[in-house]
Length: 239
Ligand SMILES: Cc1cc2nc3c(=O)[nH]c(=O)nc-3n(C[C@H](O)[C@H](O)[C@H](O)COP(=O)(O)O)c2cc1C
Image: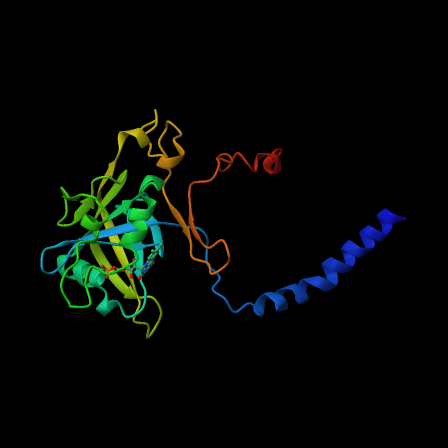
């Protein structure tokens, strides 16, 4: 009897609840973030020639390289991009680097995203120096990298577009020219891993949940769950 009741209830939920649930979803007025995002430290020389670095989480991989020649990545500059030092620097030099920090450098990374390289006086303030980190010039493009971070991508600016019609926020589209990786992150197959192959938890790359929920903030790489294509195997057997 209980089972029949449960089955009837499930049927009711399936037929009656579905439209109600979507109406409830529409009531949510917050930002529907895709979470979490990789933390990218963008490095560029300012028009004055100083190495400046800032943190971005909007963006990521656009093409892997197989479907468009080169690998392309992106980052989004929020607000009035024309006023952003990073935007001005990347536009003027036509290049930047995307550096992926590890958890070992979490507080230093947070510092790079917490204030501008342009001080209120209009003069340059060296955030990287304040964080005790080292800038090195890229080999392929005219942009600085963070020596201590395990992975760096040298990129040239290919395009930048308004994020939405009429918006002052810009999406930077970058062509990857060279990839640097600490050998501790390269596995036996020669592929880059999101944490050192030794498994040191501090070596994990950093992810960011831009949510105003209680747990919005930084995360490390989660536990390995399985290979794509293999996880769904049982649904494909016999097909
Ligand atoms: C975790 C984190 C993520 C951020 N993501 C973005 C982003 O995606 N887009 C953006 O415009 N600013 C983002 N910021 C803010 C910039 O890093 C910040 O405004 C920085 O001061 C800009 O530096 P600059 O003026 O030297 O370019 C982020 C900051 C933090 C801490």
